[in-house]
Length: 128
Image 1 (tube, rainbow, N blue to C red):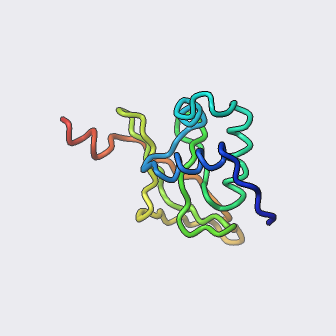
Image 2 (cartoon, rainbow, N blue to C red):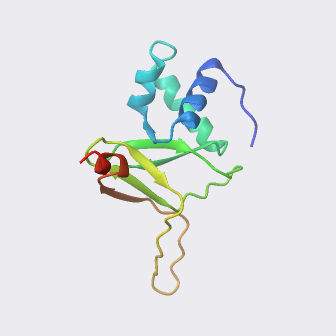
Image 3 (cartoon, rainbow, N blue to C red):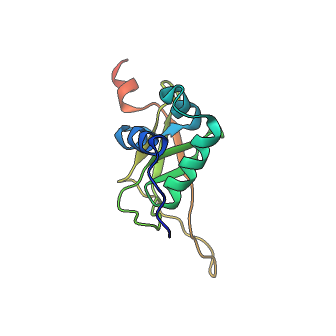
């Protein structure tokens, strides 16, 4: 994979995602960036960051694509973990230590899956 240059937009988007404990949507990123770059540039940067193994994307329960930082993904993604979507605060969190077991019929091979669980996160639950 050919390395791409680090533009100010790419650096800022990567820093935003890397610093966040929660997954961010394209709209979240665009809002935080302000006038730094347009929506098309954001899409292109997100695609490059995913190709480089720096971020991963998944579709949330509401159909919105979210982006989160990668851990130990040098070019090949390993994100077979649960993504938790809070119904109250709308945050989406990678739950790395919860990996569901999936058993398929013989001759089926899993390459990847998207596992999103919705409910109330610990932070919202403790506010009750």
